[in-house]
Length: 384
Image 1 (cartoon, rainbow, N blue to C red):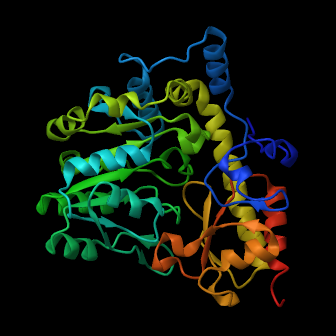
Image 2 (spheres, rainbow, N blue to C red; image 1 turned 90 degrees about the vertical axis):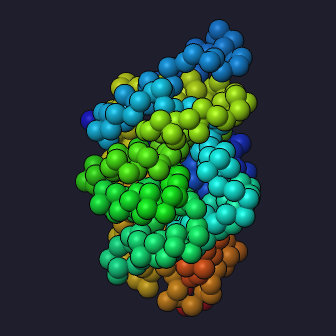
């Protein structure tokens, strides 16, 4: 059984990406959503071969990306999207903006479900629309879509919803019934659903992931999904994502996008994504999921023993932990004190919306040693 383990800290500090260059070397960086694992061997081989033959030109108009993702989706999710209804672009954020520009008019309101990935607020604005906040419902044991609140927003004139499934930062995987109900609401009010599914490959095996477009016929008519291998396989810098549709009308919207939207796809991003989505990478991805499972449980144990005031629910997907530190009395943005006094960089909770007051987001896509050191540093602040 393959194990995927993080690189040693000394090697990680040789990286030049944002995670390892934003802060001084005495800070443990657990803020941005990059992981500390080596690339899957299939990806390394594909990129090495491209370098050997100088395959660094423009992305070809005929390439296997859509077919590769369709096969991946069938194996991993039991979903069979049609390759002909997909189109690539540079990354998920760009795909979201381009789609919102087509399904909204300037000044339209787009629903987001905070606490949510901070760039969502900016992406809606970049598309010329305005944010309509409908927070997730906290049931006491889980988070879920507030369908009544979403209905009210549609009734009040919102024309689209930007869905995060799986949800960042909570790691929530919205169930099939909720997604189907959302689709029916959107269809009732003539609204569109743009679903960011970048974390989908990272859903743990004990949870069933339902792609929005697979949740029912209404979803196929109103929905757009944007997917990528970048989060699971740590490929964000290589620039490749897919916009996916399942209906003639929505497919026509994606086909109407300028060709330059597709030409922004990175050649190395495409080559790496095809390798990531291949069956040869499944064993590596399964090994990564086992490591992340161990890490999410380790974090639970560390918080219970070192920071018993912290509130943390084990995420069903991804490698991001949403932690409530309100009881420690460190203010609305405890990550500021943690960075200054513990030398651990976490994502600022308030950046995810007002619901993030008192919270931090911690990236556990790293080694058990780094996770342990980070929590011990934070715990040392208690009582100081």
